[in-house]
Each structure stands twice: as C-alpha cells, then as structure tokens.
Length: 165
Image 1 (cartoon, one colour):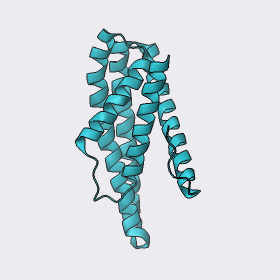
Image 2 (image 1 turned 135 degrees about the vertical axis):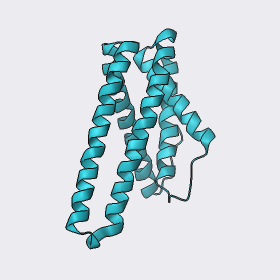
Image 3 (image 1 turned 30 degrees about the horizontal axis):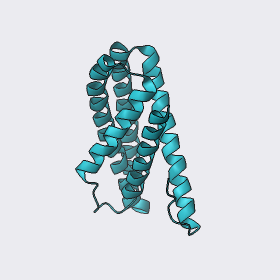
Image 4 (image 1 turned 60 degrees about the vertical axis):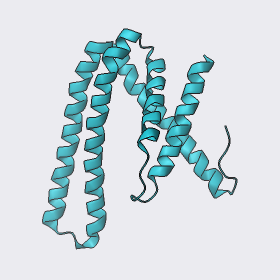
C-alpha cells in the first residue's frame, strides 16, 4: 500500500511543478525529459489505480497514449481559440464571434467523438469496469493535483514558500 501512495505523491508533486511551469509565459518550454518523466509517473499511477495486469497494460497503454495525444491537440485548439478571443477583445465583430462559437462547438463535438471512439477501444482492451475506473482515476488525480497546487499557491502567498513533502 505504501508503494502506490509514494507513486501518487511523486506524480502529484511532478504535476504541480508542471502546472506552475505552464503558468509561466509561453517563451518557456518544458524539457522533453521532464515531460517523459511526468507521463511515466502518470502511467504508474493509473496502472496501480486500475490494477492492470501486465497483459492489460500492454494492450491499454498504446491506446491511452494515442487518445491522450489527440485529446491534447484538441485542447491546444481550444486554448488557441480562447487566446484569439482575448486578443481581439472589444474589436471583435458579431460575425467573428459567431465563427468562434461555431469553432468551439465543433471542437467539443470532436472531443466527444474521440471519447466515444476510445471508450470502445478501452472496453475491448481492459473491460468496461476498468474503463469506468479510468475516468474516475483521472478525475481524482486531477483533483488532487489542483488541491496541492492551490495549497502551494496559498503557502507562497502567505510567504511560507513551498512545503517540503
């Protein structure tokens, strides 16, 4: 039981670092080795949480990585649209706003189609129960990362600096 908790703690700490780094200006990039480390920790966390057998993990991870990559691309498009809204500000015309609304809805449709497609693939590789658990594990992981990020930000705001764990 201690090993999964330790893996979870390491993964959360890494994701907190990533989150803080990503909040910096766009001219900073995260080194590839750091991103690979984070993905490895997330993999360990999800593998533990889902109790994947080695055979299931071998089938599941290529699918999950492809899904994650496609999902990241859709989210990058969404962020680009939001930046466009901010950049245009009050100078946006009705036609431009209507176009952005349609682009946003199309992006959300693509996300839903992607989730639907991969839900079927995940069910075939790890079963329906573990597919349901996957979504919960991702949600729980994200909540914990956000909680810890908030905690770190409050500590910094109070002048305490980051906590050592």
